[in-house]
Length: 149
Image (cartoon, rainbow, N blue to C red; front, side, top):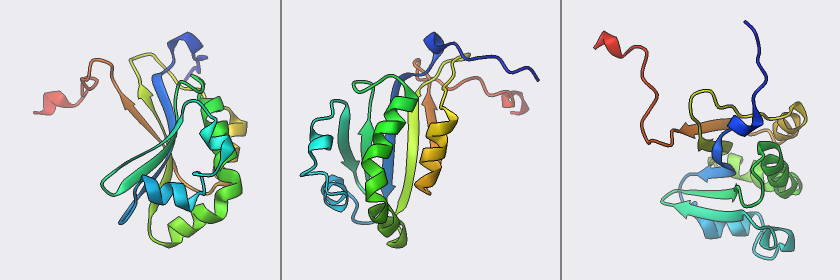
């Protein structure tokens, strides 16, 4: 199998890199408190960083306003989370689901490049890394097994 380099001009659109925490009693206020982000000048001054939540989940997200690059988004998130690793570990011990998710719009032929250094830095956080993609059209790629009925 031949590996072809990914053309950076054909990478995922609307890329975001997020810490995702889910479980009982999880919301944006608890995430801000747990990671002491309300008083963090580094966090409040970062364009493209935000905390979002819904019923039973919250995210600390770095989006395209900060950078269109997966490496830069992940590196920014790692800078936030590295010194807060004890808080990450406490969330896991409390039974919360904790992961890093890179998400964006992916069309056929597009790719996402993450450097080995950033992957190694993410691995040091000891939480799962997931990838979530959607198509710009809102339709899934054709299912190759659809003919089975």
